[in-house]
Length: 145
Image (cartoon, rainbow, N blue to C red; front, side):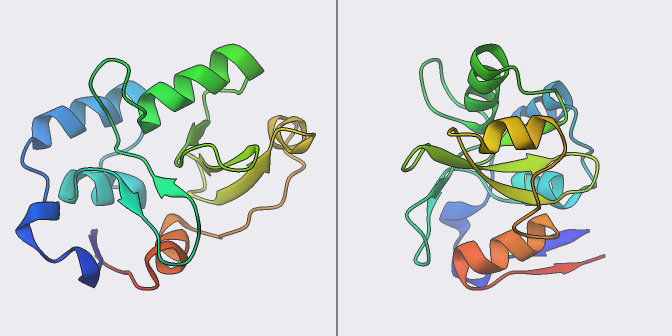
C-alpha cells in the first residue's frame, strides 16, 4: 500500500532514514504494510494541520522529543493504556488522537473519561481508518495498493 498526501509531495517531507522508521514500527508493533506503517515509511517529520489544532507527531524522535513512540510510552505508563493503542498527536485541550493497531481506526480521546472508555473498548472511533484521518488532517490523502 502507498499513502499519498499531495501537500507533502516535496522531497523535504520524504523520509530519508527508512531503516529508523522501520525499526520504530517494529518496536510499536505496527505492520509495515498497514496504512500507518506505509505513511511513516514514506514521510518523515511532524506535521501541522490546516483543519485542526493537533500536530501529527513524528514516528520516532531524539531523546526528549515528542513522537508517537515517546507519547505512547507516556500514556501507557501514566494512564495504563494497552499496547494496542498509539498516540498520534500532541496533547491539545486535554486530549489526543489515538490509533488502534488491529483495526487502524483513529479515536479522539480526552483524559476526562474518554481514556477509560478507550481502554474498555467503549469509545466510538472518530475515523474508520488512518487514511480517513489523514484526509481530515491534511484535507487530502489517498491510498493505493
